[in-house]
Image (cartoon, rainbow, N blue to C red; front, side, top):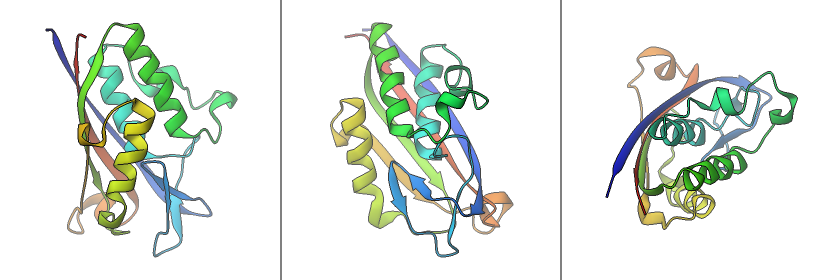
Length: 161
């Protein structure tokens, strides 16, 4: 069996007037803030897509879903993830597992993690046990610590069928 690993990272600014979507779930931010971006700005799914594309050496999500392309305006990131999964399969690979860590001071993500994992797994054709979603804070440090944005790191392990 051949293996490939990819990592991904994304960060989006928190702004008023936008929904907060993480892992395909609409969450309430205590400050009434959401993530700014051309699509739905779901940093968790964006980082995951970058990890998958990186494992395939196919660039990043900006190459496949450019922010200046009106087709992707307001796009649902879980739908974009399905397109990336089609590329994984077309290239002859399968996902063994993925793991992510969301960096945010607020909101508390623990109550939503199982729902996020299930939504992501469903769109990827995986079992929830193959999808890791964790959350941490930045202890008040940096842009995520100051609640200027939310970031996510992701890693994906692919294998040949």
